[in-house]
Amino acid sequence: QHDINMSMLARTLHRTLLHHHSKHTAPRALSTTISSLHPNNNHYRYKYQQYCYEGNTVSQNRALAVVLTAAAAMIGGSSSYTRTSTTTQAEAAVNGNSEEDEAELKEYRMSEVKQNNGANGKPIWVTYGGNIYDITEFIANHPGGSEKIVLAAGGPLEPWWNVYRQHYATDLPMVLLQKYIIGKLSEEDQDQLEQEMEALLEKDPYALEPLQERSQLLKVHSHEPMNAEVPHDQLTQSYLTPNDLFYIRHHHPVPLLSDVELRQWRLKVDLTALDPTLPIREFSYEELKQMPKSTIIATLQCSGNRRGGYNETKRTSGTSWYQGAISTAEWGGVRLRDVLLACGMKEELAMELNLEHVRFESMDGLKASVDLEKAMSLRGDALLAYEMNGVPLPRDHGFPLRTIVPGYVGVRNVKWLDSIQLAPSEAEGAWQRGLNYKTLPPSVGLTEAKNVDLQKIPAMQQASLFSGITHANVVNDGSLVEVSGWAWAGGGRNVVRVDVSVDGGEHWTTAEITEGGDQKVHRSWAWVFWKATLPIPDSADSSNVIEVCSKAVDCAYNVQPQKADWNVRGLGNNGWFRKEVDVDSSSSQQQ
Image (cartoon, rainbow, N blue to C red; front, side, top):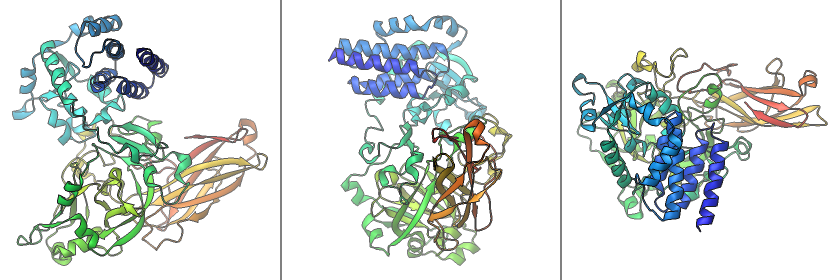
C-alpha cells in the first residue's frame, strides 16, 4: 500500500512541477491526491493551500514541504498535522533563506492583533499564515463586500477562508494582501492557531456536497464552493440544459435538509412595512405545492459570464468564466405575485408608501432584492420555483425553493429561499449594495474602489444582450464554415437577429434562428439557438486562420458592442463573441 501511495504522490508531484506556473492547477492536483491518500487529509490540504498562495518563493517551497510531510505521514502512519521533526526538516530543505526574509518583520502577539479591530477609529489587522496585515485601506476594495471581511477584524483569516474557499482558486487574494503586510505573528500564537484549525477541520463544511448530482462534463473553476460552467461544445446540445450539466455558482457550502427538517421548514413572508397588523405568514413546502402552479422556460446567466475575456485585457477579480455560466430550464412553482397577494399585498398602497423593493434571503445568508413592479407583474412571471425540468429542484440549484426572476441577472434568482420581505429600500449586504454586482467605471482598478461612492452605482438587475459561438466547422473542402451558437437578452426582450462574420467584423451575414424564436413578445425569458453557413474569405489563404464573430440584436434594437468596457469585477461582458478557426485543421480556438 505504501508503494501505491508513493507512486500516486510521485505522479502528483510531477503534475505540480509541470504546471507550477498555474497556481490553481497545482493545489487542485495535490489536495485531491492528498485527500485520497491520507486519513486526516484536511490538515495537509489546508497547509498546502495556505502556503501555495503566499505569492513568494519561500511560501511555495513550504507548500512543497507539506507534500513531503504528507508522504512521511503515509509511510509512518501519522494521522494528524503537527510540526514534527519531519516537517521542520522538510521545510528547512526547501525554504532556503526563509529565516532571513522573515527577520525583517516585527513580531506581534495575537493579543495586540485583537486590539486592532477597527473599533474606535483603530486600524483593522488580520493574520494569515503567520503574517500580519493592516487591511484598513483594503476594506472598500474587497470583492466580497466590506461586511464579510470585517468579520475577521483583529483575528485570523484562516477560519473564514475555510468556508470561503474561493480564496484558494486564484493567487489574487495573496497578491492583494502582500502590500499590506506589517509584521509576523509570534510562533507560539501561530502554533495555537494551527491547533485550533486542526480541530475546526475535523468538521468539514463541504463534507456533504451533492457530488453525485454533478456531471463530470462540467468545467470546474473551484470545488469548494463549487463554481462550474458548461463546456462550450455541450452548451447548445439541448435547448433545456440537463440538470446535472446546468452551470453552478455557489458562494458557500450547499445547504442540506433532512426529511424532518424539510417538514419543519417554512418560507417566511413579511409585509409588516405595508401594514403593521399583518402577521408574518409562514408557508410549508407542501402548502406552496398546493397553490396554483405555473411553469416558465427561462435562462439564467451569471453576471460574470465571459469574465475570462476581460482578463485578457487586464486582470479582474472573480471566477474567470468563459461562456458557459449560462443555462436554461423549465421551472415550475407558484407565482411570487400569488404568494404576496395571499399575505395581504395591496400594490397601490405599497406604491403610496414608497415600498418599492421585495427582499429575499437564503438559508446560506445571501441577500438580494428586486423591484416590486417585477414581483407583482402578471407579465413578469416571477416564480417561487420548487421544480426544475419536471423534477424537484436539485440541491445545487436551490432545493427546496428558489426565486426565478426571469430576465434578471443570476444572483437575483436566490437559491435555498428562506424569507421574503417588502421594504422601502433594496436588500442589505454585499450581493446587492456592495462591490460584488456593480459595474464600476473602467478607470477604477483592483485597489481603487474605496474612491468610489458605491451607493451611487446601481446594482445589476435586468440583464443586457449576449451571444456565443459554440461550434465553427470548416466543410465543403475548406470553402465554407458552419457556425452555430446561442443568444439571449435580459428583461424579456426578444432576440430578433443574430449577425455572424468570418472576417473579424468586416462583413456580416444574418443567421437563422433555429430554436426559441417564437417566444411571447416582451416575455422572451429564454435564449435562442442559431446557425449560419458562410463562405471562407480569400484572406484566409495566407494565414489559414479566420476570426468568426457573432453579435445579437434585440427587439429594442440594442446591439452588442464590438468591445465591452473593462470593469474591475469583470461583469456584463457583452462584446462581440469571437472565435478563431484554423481553416486547414478545421479546429477552433476559443477567444
